[in-house]
Length: 279
Image 1 (cartoon, helix red, strand yellow):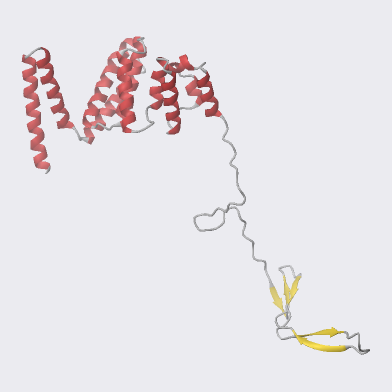
Image 2 (cartoon, helix red, strand yellow; image 1 turned 60 degrees about the vertical axis):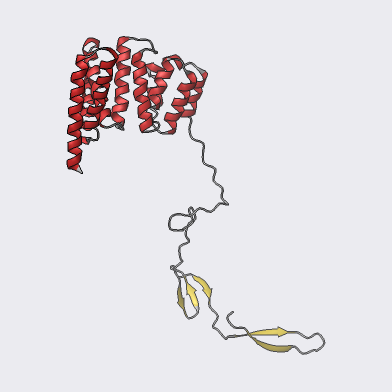
């Protein structure tokens, strides 16, 4: 199977190269169609190569972080190079979460540098990356989307995204949220302050119903203290504790106890013996 797979990939690669050559000789819609077909062929050749996908992601990751250390003029080219690596990574590994998230981050950073309108294509492309990340893993890029919606003053969408991020545990710390410049336009909105109050509120104490018995994995009652067995030592029918104090006396089995019955009609008392066993 591996042999046939290799042959098929070589054939696909050859066809894509030929399409690229034809595209260069044509113009307009026909050229575009040939280029698109060639791109798909190249993607099919590299798709599924885990090593290549991971290398491309880490390459883009390094470029992204280098760009964040440079001034605006130097950083633009680095951001664009990082984005191209993330795009290529997603061609190889369509479900690579890191590439989907960081590609959106790179576009957002670039949009801030260019100081473009929130509806600009750069933010649109960032949104597409984050939506792809959400497709791969729910909640993973919800906060990033909330930032874009805040910039556009889409309050309902922003709140929904924040709630989703909170639900899936990807929400940043409260301090980081309040200091996020992307959320500046919504920070004074009542729904936002209400959300932050709920987020930072202490959890309500758990109400414990004492009538409900809970058990651990071994079937023991949770919260119930086990009674320690008291030390006992019996000597000649007398039971002593560890300190030598008498706890109780044991009556020998079959012993006789006397019971006196007084007959009012007779002057003499009648004494009968009753055998009490086990008492």
